[in-house]
Length: 340
Image 1 (cartoon, rainbow, N blue to C red):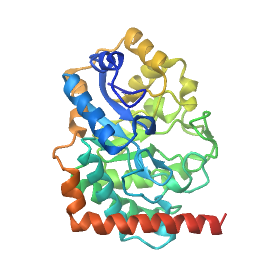
Image 2 (cartoon, rainbow, N blue to C red):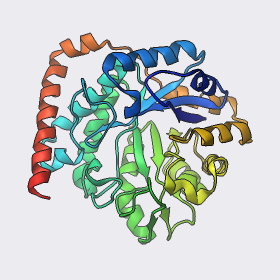
Image 3 (cartoon, rainbow, N blue to C red):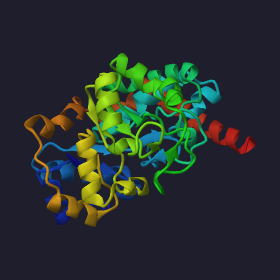
Image 4 (tube, rainbow, N blue to C red):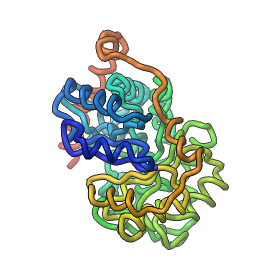
């Protein structure tokens, strides 16, 4: 049910005990957990060996400014660069390569792709593929196809669309006051169309309140998660909460209350990061009895194949994509500097 984080480069005894708690289903890694590739592989191996249950190990390795592991990894360009610099053919290779590099480390899932429209939001910016559904959707779908080619589960975020609020939900609760029709005819469309094609394994809702639709943030809203996502869009995959430690989730109360509201609203798996005291509070006080199906929901997202790093680096496809994507990243930095 809960995905938690680790403090540093090695697994502590306290962290092992937390991961072994019956309500913990996995963990998310951050830059602070990464010194170099060998250390990271040792950390993940330690987690797998010491915690005697299947854990979903995750990370945000989208590309651009959200790439937790950099030294020794391919420089992944921001998603906006594919359309902006007319490199559409590299989107599928980016999805494939990112997923392959994570699998080579024994990481199950990178939370991707971002399906928010537009670049004005402080939290999203160039993480978005584009402003217009018709032009961005084929690029996002190609990225997804690359992920699926390796076998990584895909997570569309941030439902029903975070791209048109300026405020950063990491720091505050944003409000989107646009008409309901605009959200349904525009922002929700990438999610709707990719769900219809069966290309999203999971969805992560936004910590945004859409005032013309519901009074609660989407991440704690049964309207958005049960009525729209489950019933109207017929989504049958996993619903993640975004990080309940973010300031944008504060609207829902303390950490236990946030967790209760997210679960009641329809979330299957909850992220709670950078708040050890909050994790302990939730595990001690949350009154939640998952069904056998809910207990195993995370297992559908775990990787089904293993790849060695040496095997990956030796492949001609990785070598070419590695070079092309690093070049595109440099070109993107140049473009941003010229258009600042």
